[in-house]
Length: 256
Picture 1 (cartoon, one colour):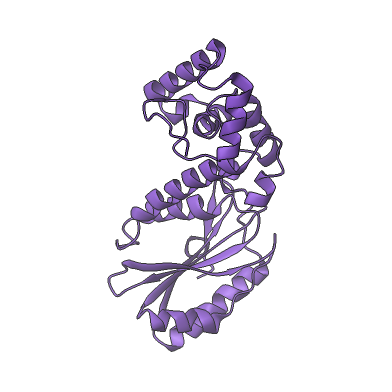
Picture 2: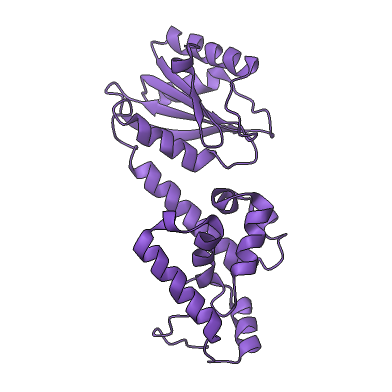
């Protein structure tokens, strides 16, 4: 068994052993980072600590994430390659594992680090809305929906279930679809609401195209769910369509 010194700041908390061994072989076991890489990393970390994420473009924020996965190499080319491939920081984090692995330089350690950051962001956003009155923290709810759905490459349909005080008691994915369609069954939505003893619903789905404008099918489906829920005394508060950087509320748009 190989033991690593806990005091070595260049080693990742999570990483693929094969990648780590290969990195060590390239630069020599126990060797320090070349000064130009070490200095660049120090400057980048300092800028982040002084100015926050807004002080860094997407590719540099991505570099900070990659430092831990690839501790002994220059990660700037890989960060730029990932941004060029997927478009922005959020889309890199949410990209499917299979597509990430197709990018030159990406291995299991990189994928794991990206998915840890993605999960942390979603967990943080969820903590601001779960078990809280939704209608009085609407912006937090919208931000949570963007964090979990805005960058997906296929449509996803979620239902937020609320109790009599409009507290969010459950957030569940009901279906996944293609790039422009997701099957929704109103009877199943209402059945699940009864199982959870929910008295109100908020529907949420994303448009991978980035344009949240509702289609005629979206409007028809929403009205079908509203009618099925009303029969059992369940209120449909809203239906949100999440796009790239913006969303559409059916309630605000007059569709409900």
